[in-house]
Length: 194
Image (cartoon, rainbow, N blue to C red; front, side):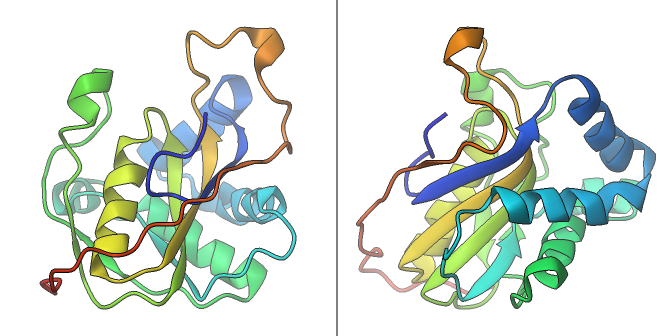
């Protein structure tokens, strides 16, 4: 899938099917964190060589889900990716809504995620999440970062749900990178930090 606006690029370590789906489900729903380092290494390898970013951040889960699980899987992946790549990891976003995306229809997903800037972002940010399905969460998070002042936002995820209408022959094999650039300017209004 092409990166949703305003993302400049989007990369995935693997497809969210079969063993990849089971691995992420164990992390997300069964608190089996032993795979985090391995996932971060795979995510680092999915990034194009020479991608320049100032810091890594993540699309935070809701506080309700974080309390229930005891952790935020996207934060775990972002911090492990930072250690793997030597990049600075900074919490730049706060989740405003309490609704999760799991089980929602495609149209419902684009109405649900709401983020607010936690602090001013640097010029270029690498956004991390565990899984991309519709792209709604990454789009909402990236839009907030751009509105708050980031000039460029790229994203990397551990797993990408294959689109149901994509013929299997048209799917790219693991490791193939799709990148689209986006040259937008941040909104003129001043962001409200929370």
